Image 1: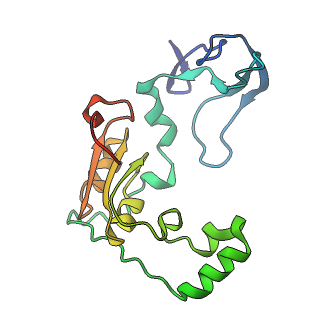
Image 2: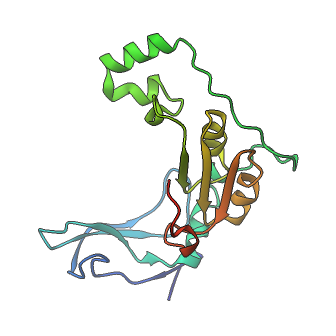
Length: 183
């Protein structure tokens, strides 16, 4: 076990997917945006069939929360302690936005950000992996979706679990509690 400035890690010289050796792409990189702790190297799998890129050292599951302490999706927007109402879907000038999105498809998420990937779909159940404090859960619930969020951050889940019409759990994508559920 390696302590990388408070992030528990293990050496990862081989590809986590195929086991081939990895060539170093970048060495001793720091997070310039959120200021997460640690020095990281990026490796690329030497197998031409794989090509996976990973960090070395590799954070252990118990070390990952330290990386997100200053991440914006894990901040508390409302600390009143009450339920958080869904955010209603507001479509300002929907026909204009749809027209511009058709003309400029690469910019569609910026032109039509309100759940743009779900536009035209009948609401169902959506899973937000890495839901943070639940902003997307609130938007999805406001658009009529049954929103389920998962995250490793207990503080963020405490806030996200207050979203009306949504469920939020502290777990990862491979947790057996999700077995049999469809999203």
